[in-house]
Length: 110
Image (spheres, one colour):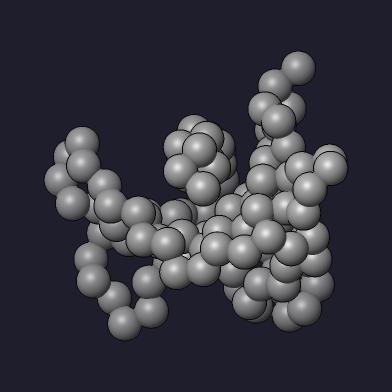
């Protein structure tokens, strides 16, 4: 799980710089914090799914709170929520919009 969190940060930063409507860091304590689903794809095992909150503490210090972690290939996520799927060095950013899963952007390392 720690490996997925560490790998995901680079992809999340990439998407937050590239896309206007994507943010993943909670800067202030909110009643409903921003949560992102992180999925690591495996060929011979079930996917690892983690729901994470990223909290800003200071300029170079962040805290990650894990609310859920489970191995499941078909993992559902909430309306309006983003999901980052990581497959090797590549990733896809998805969003659930009223029950429709839409591809927002992709990162291909090749």
